[in-house]
Length: 123
Image 1 (cartoon, one colour):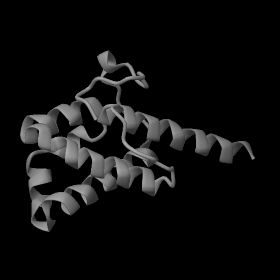
Image 2 (tube, one colour):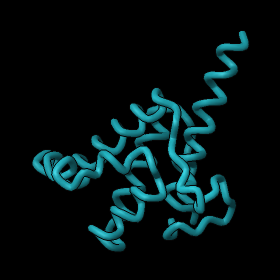
Image 3 (spheres, one colour):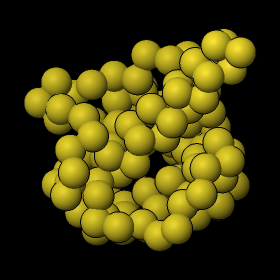
């Protein structure tokens, strides 16, 4: 995954779009917290809240930048785990992580989640 450069724009990065679906946000937040613990260990969870990263979760572009400012290129490993966990929770197949940004994958997951909700409501 490259830093904020996507082969296909799924979102407008200039707007620093915010995820407005509360259900999706809770799933994403759980994926982030679980992945954080998985990669960095159980004791690192308090660091997640100390660094106030939870306030960035709803803004994928900003979250990506914040992680990069803390971990540098190491943030990519954490982002891959978050994306894999998120797609698994949503029961969406993820064949492989291409060169899209973290934010691209989060917005794709959000769109997929929202589309499924609409289909259920249409029944």
